[in-house]
Length: 630
Ligand SMILES: *[C@@H]1O[C@H](CO)[C@@H](O)[C@H](O)[C@H]1NC(C)=O
Ligand SMILES: *[C@@H]1O[C@H](CO)[C@@H](O)[C@H](O)[C@H]1NC(C)=O
Ligand SMILES: *[C@@H]1O[C@H](CO)[C@@H](O)[C@H](O)[C@H]1NC(C)=O
Ligand SMILES: *[C@@H]1O[C@H](CO)[C@@H](O)[C@H](O)[C@H]1NC(C)=O
Image (cartoon, rainbow, N blue to C red; front, side, top):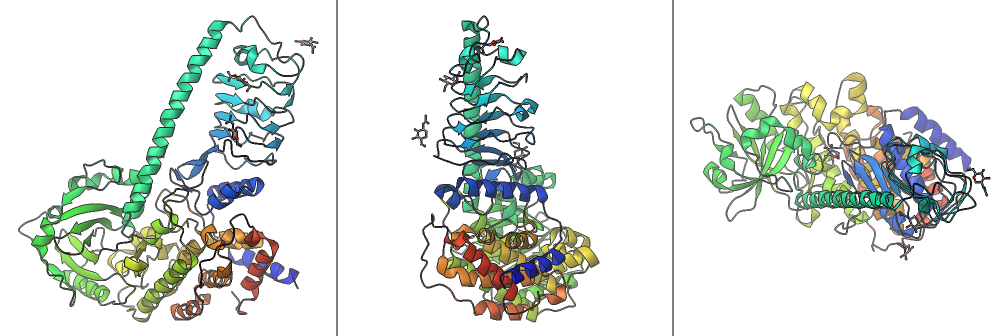
């Protein structure tokens, strides 16, 4: 009985999900997860969850990233006690710096033949035994190798890297002579001291005081450089946190959340006088820059009863704050005196539309009124300029809420009840859009559902934004930029439908449940994971507990609801559109999931959620579920 579901699961999963995966990002994450299991350290267990790298920012303690890849791992004096697998680092091909200094790691030193960029290795003050691996000889860029105070045995390999300037193997059990290579003969025999017979008896003629001074200076310079690098890194992190705090609007802010280089490189924006290099790229420009052409000054058209009591002139006088560059143009937050702030979205790359067509499409968008949809307050339209005015959502967007500030003190964990409420709010908004969908405008009701288009207003009310914009852009542009066009059906048959929104919703749920960055909603240049494939793999390989973001997986009493929501998500991600449920059905199912009474947490050191019983429950629920053939 126990074997059957797993086998079935494997069969179903392998036949259904073969979409491409960002292999490198995934492999690195898996390697980090394996290390996390090896260390089994309470702090790391707690901290190494969710997104690990995001551009140059890392959310995991001790890990550093560049362009989404791990470049450094620094875990010093943590009291870590474990045997690291020899091949633990094979996937981390961008690794430059590694330090496990002053822990209690034992066993053989890892194989570094797949880490050609390694520059600094510090494994000192541990209990490593076995020989110094010869894979170290292939590291062309190696500058610093510190293996002192371990239990290493055997001879010293013939290191001869030109850049090697820091080398210490003292206080080990190394035997044999010091090789006569140019690189090694430069070092003072003192660095080999405290070893077995002969290793310390190296060439004493060369260990003259001048040599020591030279190396002191090199050491000092290295320390200073590292210090500068460190300060720079922490500044970068602060910047990022700052941005997350400011993070507010739809996709625009994504660009601020890490890929600011796009923003800076964009030449066409120069006319908007983006001068300020302030940390958050928030710049103050008069909104008057919008209405470049005085003669052709149109008017703000307010939608329905939403007459907010201001006009174009008020808007032009308002102080505006750039929120960033988005897929459809820039957004600004305009502060009107004595009124709530509004967001001005400046649209570009629209398909050619006559005034009537444009107005008609806007009417359709504006007529969508639901408590979980961000209302369009007004628009402005001339030949040169098209602006949409929206309400400003105070609590930012869901992307920043889920991924922002991980691993920092500023992070407020996002618990199950909030996530469930968001899943429900988004589902209701989508149901509404689907029920009121007018096929004459376009083929897909929302078209661009992703975390950054889910905004949180006061009390964390969900407001879905960006709906209907798919009808305003030409297909080639839509195909490049909108989430619905990343669905399996568009890849295979170049068609999207309302079910493409259901797929996007499923991906959004998976991101909400796992806390992992999804490939389809990741900002440009940032690697995400194909979450549909990933989740199936995770279940198959029985690390089910890792599926859920640690911030919710510690809520033991929420587990049944989490599994149920996971099941809904997986059905929404079905490769065949017809097999995905309707939004109405989804709303009904989510409504039946209960919030938990208390936000009671299990002890973080308690691994109850990672044990067998949980995995078994997960695969059973996923397979048996309600008997559907997903
Ligand atoms: C080594 O690590 C321990 C904690 O594991 C710490 O108490 C000690 O101060 C560290 N020693 C050095 C020299 O950093
Ligand atoms: C090399 O390691 C030993 C043992 O920890 C230490 O005493 C010595 O100062 C180190 N030498 C250098 C140059 O770092
Ligand atoms: C020391 O090394 C030399 C070769 O450099 C070797 O001939 C000699 O036997 C070694 N002595 C000991 C005590 O190991
Ligand atoms: C990340 O860092 C690399 C090198 O340090 C740099 O080339 C790249 O532009 C940085 N990316 C971002 C988003 O800052």
